[in-house]
Length: 432
Ligand code: SAJ
Image 1: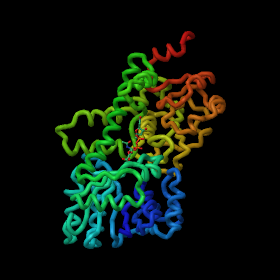
Image 2: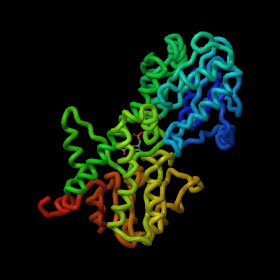
Image 3: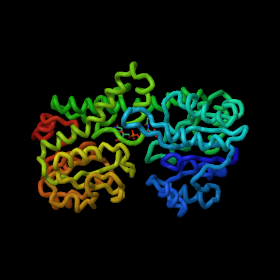
Image 4: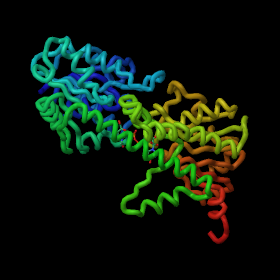
């Protein structure tokens, strides 16, 4: 398999295509987006991810990664297109996968391999992808090999994890799994585990659901701690000393294109069997409103509020499903004068509910500050500057990222998500 046609040059497709190119494959990268096209023609990655720029530039300079708007014949096809949630039904919108399959079908030749990398509900490769590819006249599993090989990389560590993580090769038949595994040995150093396509689909969404449910539990602990007067961060630290306990971190909610979305793929697959998964989604989706409630205890609209962080987590530029953005929307709806600040986000990013300002402008004369994303830039903020700029020294930390004593020393009243008032009183008492 020497030539690969890769459909979708986003967070996963672009690094994957670059890795294959640098491993010696001829890669035709396909993406209809003019923004992606324009950036790549200049050898630029359209995504802010450590080392990605260098990798993409090297792949393009090697002459083995070409970018175009339409797919072309190849030995292997990889589909890495979005699978968003349909907001009306809460089910997977598989229209991009379907379109990619329809574009590939007329190009297929005997012996080709088609790999679906996008995260999909269990059964999609078998029941949606294979029948469309069969319209080519080639028999799935016999004339053409079909597999699901989900990506499992963590944004912020994509390049390392692409190479090092163990990987699933889920085939329509065992021979399909074998072909797909062979392809990925080009750059994957982790173990490549063979299974069937539907199991691979289920495993991928189980992994992200596991994380979502566990964050929901941490968030529920935070809500309880606020009621009973405990510092949840201290409680979690102590609980995690138990050899079989690992409570995750509470926060303003769960975002990103994966963890806030994929659990719904399991709900849709067996809606009468699920209880924990939808409850967890509800808890995590309810956190931005809880943060707004905490803000309301500090200041009332139309106070000037600086919201630090817009992305869905630290050190990424991705605002998809971002709970920080949801907090900002709610604060604007409630009549606060909202200023946003995020050094990782471009000011022309569409969909921002308030102006995105440099940190000095966001803090100047603010009546309250809310830390929503624990970017290093905020953790290392110049506290003297912050103290000099804001009008009223009130800050809410939703990530437990700030040095409480240092902020208090500058005269700030600091509230922390998951910390009850009695816990705070205890921490501030002379004997504490
Ligand atoms: N979060 C918390 N508390 C935590 C951990 C995360 O509130 O203790 C929040 C984050 O702030 C963020 C969201 O959850 O809003 C998701 O962040 P994340 O770092 O847990 O995961 P993602 O979405 O960046 O990447 C996940 C990863 N999946 C798992 O860890 C099981 C990654 O390996 C997947 O490849 C990726 O989804 C994907 O593409 O599916």
